[in-house]
Length: 189
Image (cartoon, rainbow, N blue to C red):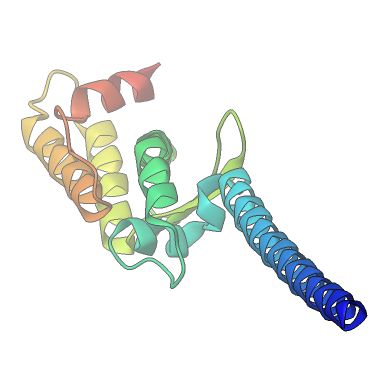
């Protein structure tokens, strides 16, 4: 009888050991799956961070900043882009202003391009502006270049400030101080 009891105890111990081993193997697999999921999400986050401008460019970048981001766009990445976009916007507006002044000096007048490739310290991005506002900035450049020396340029400066403020507001940036002084000084330089 004690032999049977020993065999039964051994069988129970083997079954208990088998249950423990299966449980541990299942937990190891679950931890491995979780680790792979975390590693994958970290890799995706790193890929999003590495992409300058959240992977957006041109009109898609403008639309995202204006409140219509493509599906799946990370809001934190978009806020980081918005903070850097002020420099891109200033470069593009300054270019349009200089282009208008140069065209006035050469006697030309044309429809200004509303796209421009802007180089930044870490990358380059295509900047896109609404055509009407790009044309308004260009027209201000034309008008300022055509003014007689010493003439009052207050109305043109006001139009330029309004256009630049509208661009800032549309893409979710605070307008800040009037842009005409800094832009016109940069255009003269």
